[in-house]
Length: 144
Image 1: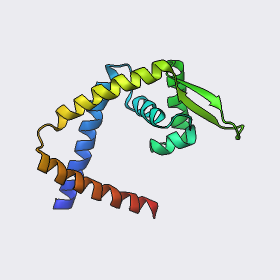
Image 2: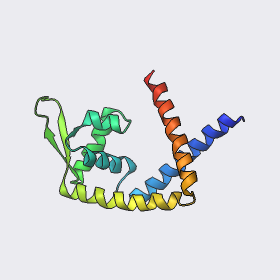
Image 3: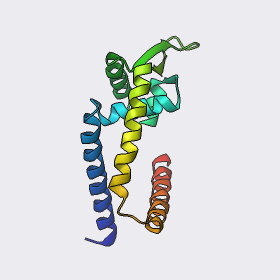
Image 4: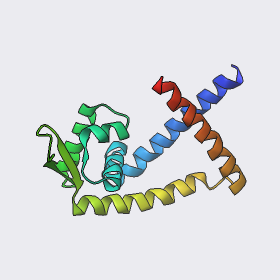
């Protein structure tokens, strides 16, 4: 295995470990990873459409619709008709949705701090620069 294959495999393993940790973490609050991130994005941009939410979450529209319906059943979001497009809906957090999102986001930050506390400031900075560079490159490849 060459060094690039090793890097790819390490990144994949890191993603799987982070994702599994997030899955376990969010389940303590009765949420899935995707439901939390839907709440998070809707908190950042109230009134987002399902189409925009699916774009933000890198999933298809039918998956985003399913996530929104589940959050609606929990009382965390409400859908309101789009003011100009009769086929579209705008999605807003309810008070309970905003409260759970804020509570979980604070706890998740603490959890992530504990997962990354082995890095010193110089390592963090260097690592972040490398990941940003990789992400920009991957976005450019996807946009081609």
